[in-house]
Image 1: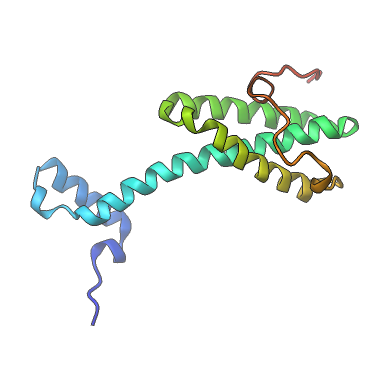
Image 2: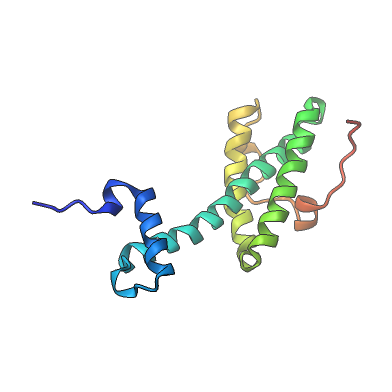
Length: 146
């Protein structure tokens, strides 16, 4: 019979208990294995957040570039918001900067999927490698009268 731990039963309660143990410096009672796993997953989530935001940004940049007749205020502000959020995310997590080129590559795949889902464009007819430079991704000023 398998024993169910607090970690398995109530994750939030487990986190609070681990905090109490750490604050009390009761090292021998800390659930080290699960704590290591959770800290590792936090780092993975920061990378995933960057990739996801880049996917939305790159998808909208593709739509903006390849469907100029359909440009909208909504697209403009989605691009602006994603740029701001990515910038904040990188400021809060500067060690992600060396990962940026890989994140752009993965984000571009997500962007192609977004274009396929939201537009009549065929993602197979678009460049299969990100055509935008980092300057275009993060700093390009677009003509839009909001």
